[in-house]
Image (cartoon, rainbow over all chains, first blue to last red):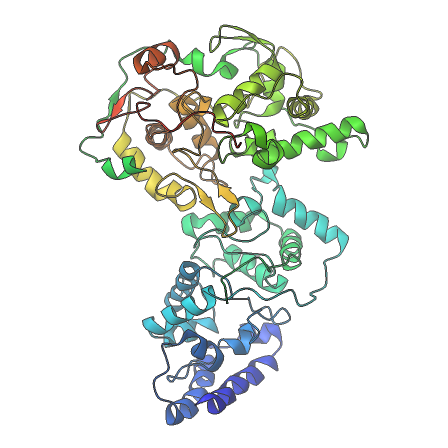
Length: 248
Length: 310
């Protein structure tokens, strides 16, 4: 088996990313990401034959072409990384994951880490990964601290009722009453890292994420203040994601 | 829904509106009663004004029923809709048939049933038609709670004045309805949430999130929303959700006509004669009940009315 050398690349990438503060991580240039990615390539190609079509293998260990293990940022317990703001991928709809990988690759979801990674994945590798993650059940909550009461009240109100004087429907009207997600276009929000949700709202507002159907989220994000984005992100981060996802 | 696939642009003849508007008052009493004087926009009081007492408990129950009708009023609901699907912001939003305006309109004479209706009786009609269910008996705690919630929202509103935002937005009547155009608008703007087959969408745990617009789990042929006039006004002001007033009037009319020319549960007043039911209750160029669309006569093989759980 080729697990040990792959593990090295996974750990190497983890270590490189983890030592950077969040702002620095987001500021990683494309070339740095590619260099990191190809650091793994040297190890992988020397040791490993073709295992690329196993999504779990890619998620754990990366690809032969040097794309790093998804688990290095998204968590090897499949729960994401709350501290780093990296989303949980387990239990997301296959169609949603595919759309996001395509969006990273074509730049409509402009992200300096994920752009080169998505571009480095062959179509069949993307497909294997989406099947793998869609089939995973979201892990139980990791004891993420509950938001304080003020944020929670405001966040709950925006999530469950909306603020119609600003033409803001409740998040729940599209993402489900428990933030459990609907279909391929409306991902689960429950249990996603607060930093991740807030960063996406900010990306829609700034126009760096432009892959939302009908431009729905752009319109929503434009009407949310930074405080509201923070409150609603904290609300969903504190909701359990245990009901979400496949059988594995 | 097979209708969708059988529907073709060629046979989707535009519906010429030869007749006058005479039949419409039958369908939309909310829009036509009340004095013609206008008032400033009405803002219903906030949830924080709900008193912390037994009266307040009933207001809160009404609000819960309004949000989650299938769970809170299960015995009377025969489809996958909630009150709040068509009365947005929990009955608070103008041009989305707000409860605060409806509450003040009753008692009112309704041509729909030929007598003066109380607000509670009007609510019964919602269950019978829009919810494709069964009328809670007058005095039932569910009706009491809904009426109490409506009264709470209407607190402070002037009586006998036509309030802006009452009912659904009134659009200028088009010269024709173009079903082929409506189908294209539906595919581009509506199917994302409501599904290509109009059946709505549920989350993976089975919770209905996006309401069905036609088919056996949607509103029946007796509902106000089965009139293209109401549907077009609602859609123009409110759809796609969060993007109200983004469609042109023609898009709103045509997509409303497309939605309201798909099959849906039978009109509960149907007694075996489709033509007679159409003549009695649907005699309008904005009502497709009993009409042939793409070779299918709507209402002829409709899913059953009043499918409440046993």
